[in-house]
Amino acid sequence: MTHISRQTDINGGEITQAVVDRLTVQAISVSPKEIGDYIHDKYGDKYDPYNSVVLFDTETKCIYGYILAHTLNIPNVDVVFSNQTEIISYLNNSSGLYLSDIVLRKEIKETPLIKLLNTLHLTYCEGDFNKDGLYVWMDCGETVFVPTKQDNGFSAISLNNVSRVLYDKCLKKNETLKWFQEELGK
Image (cartoon, rainbow, N blue to C red; front, side, top):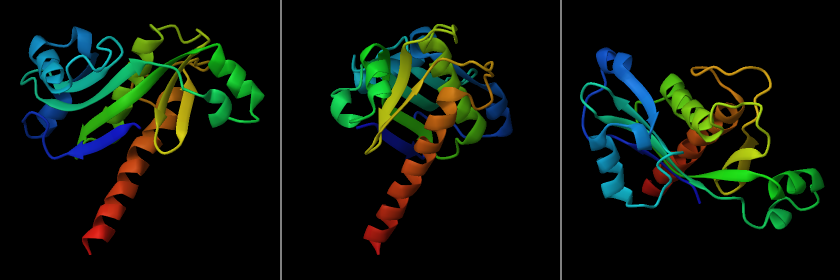
C-alpha cells in the first residue's frame, strides 16, 4: 500500500516566498549529500535512489517533500484487472515504477507537487517520452497506474500524463484520511 503523509515539518525550515523561489526537485541519487543521507538514515536501502525524487531548498537543504519509488510491476495483474485483456497484456509486457511513500509538508500543494511528479516521470523514462512499456503505479486501496508515454509534449510545471492521474490521488487520499481522523476524534 502506498503511504501518503502530510507533515508539519520534515527536517526544518519555514516556508517563505524566498524559500519557494529556491525550491528544486532532483532524483535522490544526485541530490546534495546531506539530503541523501537524511533519506537513507530514515529508510535505509528500501527505495530506488535513481527513480526517487526530493523537493528541497537549495540554500538551506531543508526538505519539503519526497517520493520514494521502486522498480516493481503490479502483482497479479490478471486478478487486479480481470476481464480487461488489453490492460493485462500491456502490464505483462511492461516495466513498472511503484510509489511506496509520498511525504509532503502540509503547505506543499499545486506546482511543487506537480514538479515532484513530473521529475519522477522524466527520470523514470530517462527523458524519452516516446518510450513505450513503462508505467508508474501506486496502491491507494485501488491500483492506479499510468503509462509514461507522452504524445503531446512535456512541461515540468504543468500536469502531464503521470502527474495528472497521480496528483489527484495524492491529494484526495489525504483528504479522505483527514476526514476519517476528524470523525474518529469526535
